[in-house]
Structure formats: structure tokens, C-alpha cells
Image (cartoon, rainbow, N blue to C red; front, side):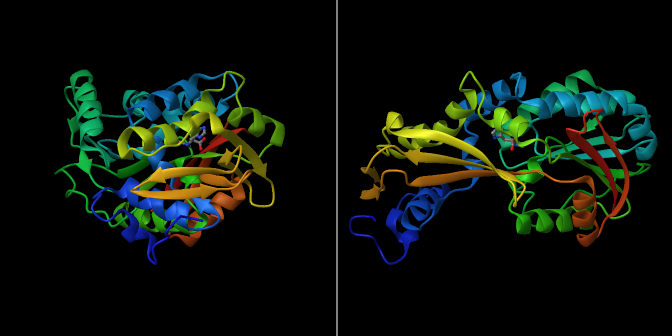
Length: 321
Ligand code: AVI
């Protein structure tokens, strides 16, 4: 319970014109405590995520890259000549290069990201390496309404690219909403979607509880970030990283668990956490191939070819819009 809990948690941080402060205060005011995983990704969090992608236990990145590499020609054939690639998020330049290198005269690359700075950097690098490609960043929150520029004259299919199984970080409702928005803006084209698959829970457990503790640091960075940016007083050593597979819900859940009964100051208030109480920070849903195709159909796509690795760890879906 918060000392002097306000009626409306959003008003607790009035004056801090900051979504993180508002959402964290709201998370501490409600039980169970839960905050969006989007707050992992400040500069430090993005660096830690890059390290996660290199970990021996974290199979998704290298498996998806191997699938895209092995099937680049087939994927390029689906895309056709002069395709426009719309990437949701601007983090995976390595992956989009695999597509660009296989494509027949790609017309334009439109990375969409909420962070204009990150986007400009990523776009600049790609433009240098592909001088013939029109690179046009779009600053937008792609989980909301999305307006895209008109197709270039003579451009081919418009293909969305959403790799990394980031769709698994949405709640099921958010995933359907995202897919419905994507189906609308890509109408006549397609979505190339990277999706992590349901598998042996031991493999999943290891991927989110790596031996080097990088995932733990990534999770705890959310509290470190609150201390840095919001002047919060989270004692980092009084919380531990917890990640477990919830089999009925087909998802990894990540939490930050309080080691003791403690008080934290944020936004001019004190918030109390009980021993063992947690702040939920992330879902990472896993899918079956059939389950994902069904979800995509309900959002307005016509599911096409699916590519997977030999161990069926990860999948890449061609969804016609
Ligand atoms: C970005 N996203 C798909 C990652 C995942 O696996 O859900 C984030 C992550 N969380 C812990 N490790 C990696």
C-alpha cells in the first residue's frame, strides 16, 4: 500500500510530464503490480538486449537469422520485384539486410519507431550501405493508428517486417489489435512475421535465466532506470529477477520480486512492497504454428508459407494482407 495513496494513481505524479513516471506509479498503486516491457529499452536496456541476443541460451535471434538466411530466395520470390519493406521497430538492421540482399531491386525501406533518434541513426547506416534504396524513417507508435506514405510510383508489393517475436511481448488483445492495424496498412501486400514457438520448457527457462545473469540485469535495469530518470529509490539488491514458463498461457513471465518488506520513494510518495511481492515486467508469448495462423486469420490476413528451423524452435510466417 502507498502511504497517502491518491484516489487516482495517475495524479500521484502530476507535474512529472513523463509516461514512465505515470505508468510506474500506476503499477505500484494497483495489485498485482505490472508495467509495460517497453520501459526496458533506454540506452542501457537496449545494450543489454543486444547482449542477450548473443547469449548461448538465447536461441531466438540466431535461429531466426538462420531461417531468414536459408530461405532468403523463397522469401524474396514472395515479395516480388521493387518491394517496399515496412519494418515495425528499427532494431534489426542485420535481419533486414538479409532480405535486401536477396530482393530484386527493392524500392524503399520504411522503418517505423517511436524513438526518432534511434530511427535516424539506423536509417543513416542503411542508406550509406544501400545508396540505390529510398530509406524513409517514420516516427510513430505502431501499436496505435498508423499512417504510411503513399507507395512510390512503380513500387511493387508493400511488405511489413516484424522479426524477433516481439509480437509475443504484447498481451493477446494487443497482438490482435496490432495485427489488425498491420493488415489494414499493408492491404494488398503482406507481413513477414518472426514468431517464437512453444517448446520444451527447459529450453525456454534457460533462455530467460542465462548463466551470466544478463537477462536478470536487463530486467533490473527497469528499476535502475527509474532511479536514474525519476529519482526513485529502488534498492536494486533488494529485488531479484524471476522468469518462469506459464504452460497453460504459453508464455514466459518476467517479474522483479521484493526480497523483503520495503518502502520505495517515487514521485514524492512512498510505496510499500511486501516480502515476495512482485512487479510484473514482461510476457513473452510462445505460439504453435497453427495458433499463430489462426490469430492472423482473425486479424484479417491470409496465412501463406511458414519457414522453421530443423528443431522447430522458431518460425517465420508469410501472411498475405
Ligand atoms: C524483444 N523480445 C522479443 C524479447 C523476448 O524474448 O521476449 C525480450 C527479452 N526478454 C528477456 N529476454 C529477451
